[in-house]
Length: 351
Ligand code: TYM
Image (cartoon, rainbow, N blue to C red; front, side, top):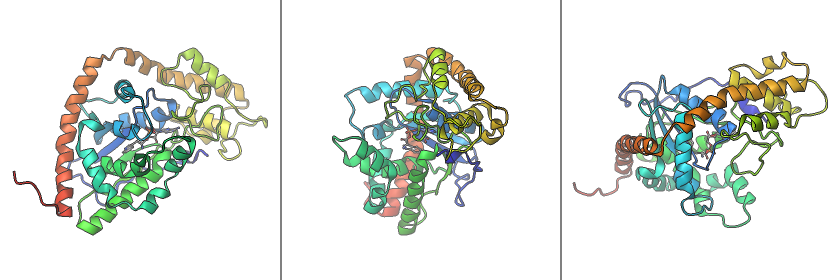
C-alpha cells in the first residue's frame, strides 16, 4: 500500500525547543542503519528530505551502527557499512558544515539514554511493534533481545537532541509513535524533560515498493536484486529494472495503490523524483512502456550526480567529518542525558 503518498503537511509539536537551539530554528534529527549500500527507498523516503531540511532547520543526522547490531553481523561488517553510508549521505547533499553528521556509537550518551528509555517502555508496547514481528519471523535463527528493545534506543536517539521534527519514511511511523509515547510517559513521571517530537513523512516516496513485488516495500534486508534499485546501480541496470517492473494486465495508467500497486509505485517514484503529484502524473500516460521509461530517466537524473560525488569523497575526509560531528553531537547529547538523570533523581558523582 502506498499510503505515504497522501500529502501530509509538516507539523511541529506543541512543545518545541526553538529557544534551546542556538540558531533559534527547529531541530531536526534522523538516523539510518549502515546496512551496506542504500536503495532508492532510503533516498526518496529519507536522505533527499534530510538534505532539503538542512536549509531552515538545525539538523542532526546519525548513522545508527548500534541499531545494526540487532541482527547478526560479521565482525567488521558494520564498520565497512558505516563508512559507505557516510559517503552516501555526503554525496546526497548532507553538508557537515551545516548539519551535525555522526556515528551513533561515537556518542556514548545514546546507549546510556537507551537504557533509561527501556525503564519507561512497556513490554506490551514493544510486543506490538510490526518491525519486530516482521524481522523476528523472517530470521529462523537467533533473535536478539536488542531487536525487541530496539524502539527504546531509537527514542533515545531522537530525545537526546531536543528534536522537534523527525524526517522518515512511512515504515518508521510506528517507531515515531512509540518515541512520542515514551517521551510523554517520562515527562509525566519525572517532570518536563524531553521535547515531544513530530514525524515528517514526505508526500511522495514515503513507501517505495519492490519493483518485482510491489506489495512489499523496497528493503535492504530482503534479497530481491531485480526489485531493488541500489543507489550504486549502473544506468543500464536501472533501465533494465524499470523495464522489467511488474505491473498488471488492465492497461490503464491510474494511481490506485490498492488495485494497481505496480503502476502506482512507478507513479509515486516519478512524483518523488520530479516533485510532482502521482495522481496528476497518471493523466500524462496511456501506456505502461512510456511511464516505465520516464520513471527510469527521472531516477537516473537523480542518481547519476550522486554517483559522481561518491567517487570523489575520500575515507580520510569522511573520518574527519565524522569525528567533528561526534564532538558536536556529544556536547548536546550529554546535556540532555544529564537533564534526564537529574529528573530521575539518581545520586550524581561529585565533580
Ligand atoms: P532504515 O535504516 O531502515 O531506513 C532509513 C530511512 O529510510 C526510510 N526507508 C524508506 N523510505 C521509503 N521507501 C522505502 N522502501 C524505505 N525503506 C527505508 C526509512 O523510513 C528511514 O527513514 N529505525 C530506523 C533507524 C533509526 C532512526 C532513529 C530513524 C534509528 N534511530 C531515530 C529516525 C530517528 C531504520 O531502521 O531506518
